[in-house]
Amino acid sequence: CSTAWAAGGAHEHGAAELLLSSEGKDVQITFNAPAQSLVGFETAAVTEEQKAAVARAEAILMAPRDLFSLEGNSCELIDVTVDVSSLVDVGNAPSQAEAHDDHSDEHADDHDEGHTSASDHHVHEHHDHDDDGDASNADSHSDVSASYLFECQSDEALTRITFSRDGFPLGLERIDVLWVADWGQGAGQATPQSPSVNLQN
Image (cartoon, rainbow, N blue to C red; front, side, top):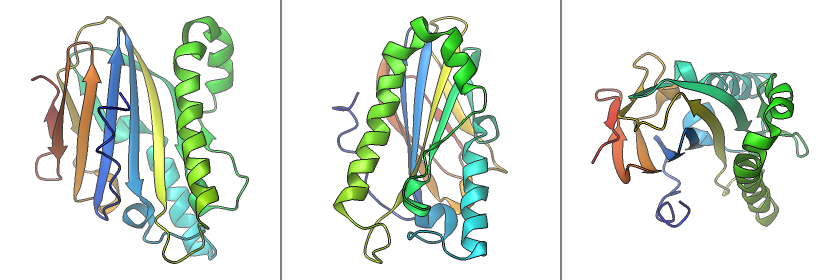
C-alpha cells in the first residue's frame, strides 16, 4: 500500500487525503490534512481560542460516522486514533477511542499483529517528522491525521464512500481518495458539491 500511496502526501491547504486499505473483512482508513485547513494555523496552540479549535477538530475526527459512510458492506468501527501532536505540547499521545483498550484485550489475537503495527508505524513516521523540524517554526507544515479500523460483516467489496454534506471537514475544498483493496485499486476526488467517490473500477 505504501508504494501505491508514495505519490500522495502533498501538503496543500484546502485539500485532504483519505487512504483506504481493505483486506478480507478488515478496512483501514487514514485521513491526513494540513493543520491550516482544519484549525487555521500550523504552530502549537497557545491561546485558548487556538486550543479550542484543536479540540473541536479532534472531536470531529474522533467521530468518523459523522464524516463519511461506507457503502457495499456493513462495517463496524473497531479503533480510532487521532494525531494532533503537531499542534499541542510535545509529549501528548495521540487520542484514542475510550473503548480501544478493552477491545484490544478482547481481540488481541485477531487484530494486534495486522493493524497495531501499522498504526504505530504511522505515528512513528509523524514523530520523526517532528524531530526533523520544530513545529513552532512559522515555515513548518503541520499535518493532522486520523486512523480508523473497521471490521466488516463479510469480505464483499465496498462500493462507495460518501462524505457528509454538513460535515465536510472544516472548510476543506476537496478530499483525494486513494484505495488499495482485494477487489482493486484506484483514486477519486470528493468535494462539497460532489461528496461521493465510487470505489469500483
